[in-house]
Length: 194
Image (cartoon, rainbow, N blue to C red; front, top):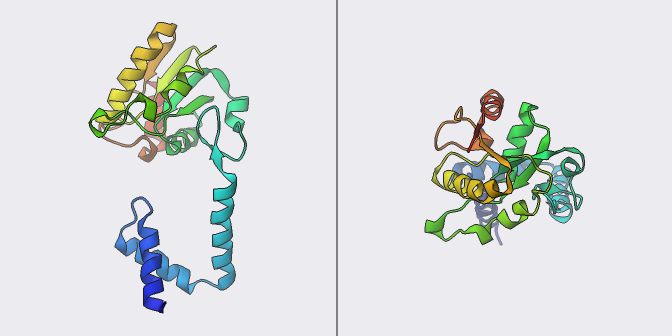
């Protein structure tokens, strides 16, 4: 395999990452090629170690090296904040304004695309409600996020648990993980009951 084929293969590999277009993938590929061999090996080792050690917390569904993550062991267990993906947790943690549990759905309902409740972690959420006083639904404010929020509220309310939704300091159609700390903190503080 000549260098051009190897370069094209590396660019194609980077293109498989989310939000990485040809220009960015090409930049990454040239950066790798120009790295010292020891730095390339450190990168390869870090990727392999992450793949080998990181899994999902069996309780909340966030990334963890342990079966149960530290947050699930230590957090206020009376409140659960439901997010679409682990990136949502990162956004909330930056605010420093939340000390409860999280629950990662790993997606949202989208009946048009055939994504139903069995395809995301709704059953696991319902299994965690013992002792919970409030569930904060923090899915994105797009169509599938709103659909998921309404569906979850309908399922949870019969348990006599307060169900709240983040206040709309977040622009409609935006990603929770993309919100700045101040906007997200205000949305969390001003959440509304569903």
